[in-house]
Amino acid sequence: MKNASPAGVSDRLDIRIAEKSFERVEGGRTCVLRDLAFSLEPGSFTCLIGPSGSGKTTTLRILLGLDTDFVGSVALPGHDARIAAVFQEPRLLPWRTVEQNVRLALPDGVTPDLDGLFDALGLSDVRDNFPGELSLGLARRVALARAFAIDPDVLLLDEPFVSLDEATAQRLRGLLETLWLKRGVTVLMVTHNLREAARLADRLVLMAGQPAHIVGEEEIDLARGARDRDAVEARLNRIMQRHPETVRI
Image 1 (cartoon, rainbow, N blue to C red):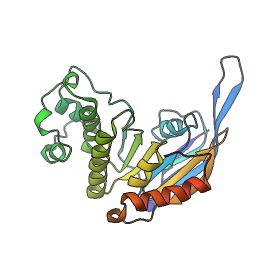
Image 2 (cartoon, helix red, strand yellow; image 1 turned 120 degrees about the vertical axis):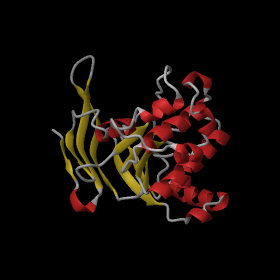
Image 3 (cartoon, one colour; image 1 turned 90 degrees about the horizontal axis):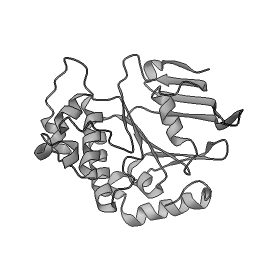
């Protein structure tokens, strides 16, 4: 079974999933993950990429401690590591305002000034609104604000921009990148959108197979200021040639 422990002075997050399986309705078990192992360096931005159903969200659930029925270990970066998550759905309480939803993530008695965070995410004018009054794009910004409000050491993102129009998704990617660069948080984002991953990440961890396992890693060593369309497309084409079964643009 799993073993969770602090990662020590390295502040690195280590994931070692030897096996993860689910019980089948008709009996027996189906293995969905096997020999999945990778590490996250402090302050890095990593994207976990693979086809739908390859176990990416299951991996995040294991990291969050929401699924403990696996063989392997997760070593967290220190005893007091703060881990935040943003899911595909914003998951806001409809009877609470934007600011109240964000503050719900804070420990009791902690009341930081959120003005700078709301300004950075373009939420200052809607902080007293209720979720039902927000567009999906604004609701996703609130979910990001809630995650960053706790000043996390590790941020886990489960396809946070899926189903958004491209213009809105692009704005939110830019906001996420700005906050990441400013705060130095370690990010792991699940996506099947290779272009999105190359736009944001330092490294891609590629999953495929049944059961899913890591089939390769790709470093995105383009400088942030050099990630124009042509440079990104050239890098994507090389990755697609090496891993055509794993990723799509």
